[in-house]
Length: 138
Image (cartoon, rainbow, N blue to C red; front, side):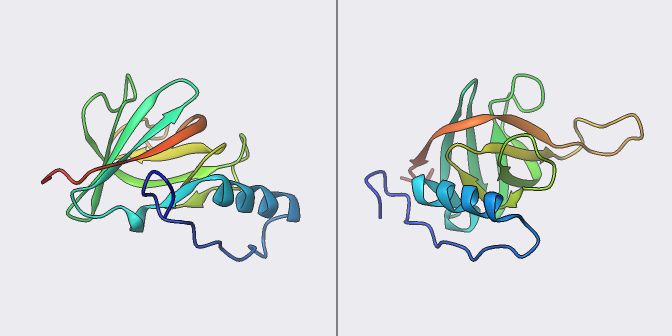
């Protein structure tokens, strides 16, 4: 466990479809700090500080809710998917992992649709800090 009680990452193996540079960046993010969503217990959560915004991600009975975006999730809003990515590349998302120096990417159920009605992900500025929140029942 780290100082802030976020467990040490289980470093993933390199992904065969990603370049060595992208795999190295993902490994660096895992070493410098990050968490997989399966490590957030029911009733628990994390604060995610990006360069521009502070988000709160909570696990409510196995479903994740996020708040903090001024348009799409001012209040806790259910998300369909979450992950983080390196830079602005569309190909390098790491699902269910939130990593320092990566960009948070999430899809809010029913929001942020393109001209064809397809849900588009919300992509943040770089994640600067991740802090564990105590479970709600404590």
